Length: 196
Image (tube, rainbow, N blue to C red; front, side, top):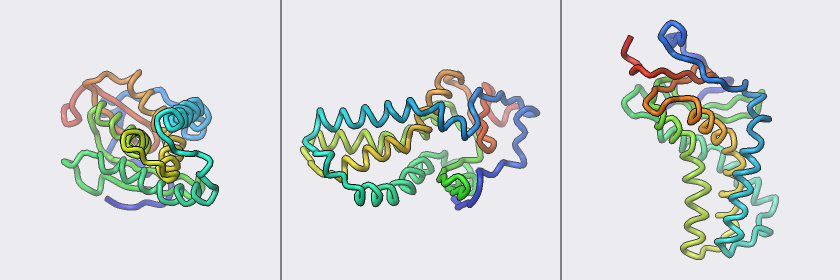
């Protein structure tokens, strides 16, 4: 795995049209931030409701200082969880964690193909690990930590693009297909990547 500064680098060897990959219908990254806002409201709303209904955590204890501290720790953790779910049978150089200063955006990127369901799982993994699991543990074990609530709420806000991306893949790409990114664009095809 490597670290990259700047926009997602595009693979020079991946030529989607020539290799039989079909582009998904998806907005550009800037428009996606606006189009995906309902997923932000849904994710944060459901997380807050779950905390209020199923735990005894007082959300008023989530101070601005705690919130900022959680953000600083959570951003790299969120992206590392994405990266931990990438296929292991590919060169480690295919995986990267990046920061695009111009857009103040952190991201994880895998420069290779993966099955559609694996792709969706990679997108949803941080929501499961950093939102659903902490709330479920707090509910079952009776933890009343504002840190748990903060991690869950902040991550649910960070993950709205992931939720929107998983939704787009789920409604456009057949279950048995392969998915691959070239920069910000997502492509799919039914044939295995090594098949011509």
